[in-house]
Image (tube, rainbow, N blue to C red; front, top):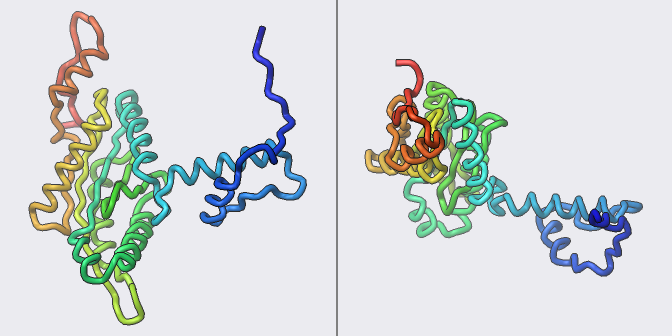
Length: 252
């Protein structure tokens, strides 16, 4: 016997919704039923609002780390199937601790919000900007060719360098940012962890070489790790002739 469909009749008074309504009100969303709004429509709106909050960083309004990781997982699968070029950028505000220590955490928060807004204006609507943790941000750029990737990374660097953050009527702070990036290996069934690790290595390279610079691991420079070789062979199963372990990244 098929399961019974849930009843369309919902008694809102029996549900403990005060915390959900308070969360939405704090985020400037209406958490109360509209006049004449059906209970199911109201609950769906409440659920949609909570899902949106769960995917956002409360300070900057950007995607949070958990949501961004889910997008990276999907992107790496898309690249493996289609061969489309995708770029992952990790960005870290240089000497951010000195801002908090010298001017206080409120000034630090203002800098984070200003950098977040600036990053959003530097990329396409289809790209995703996230606050990855602390003073670190991340950008996912699908369908991104190498020349465009290098251009947008440098555009971001210059935009942040030119940014003046007014933290009080008498104080403007200027910051710089270090950027590390890596393209997903095309036609390779890699993992999000390996992709993030490559971008992180480039970020450390940018910092090691003096900060306020970009370091991008271009597609034709990407080599296939031992773990990725295993994933590739596993994908091809027991075929007599497995695919080559190193897949060309674009035309020579």
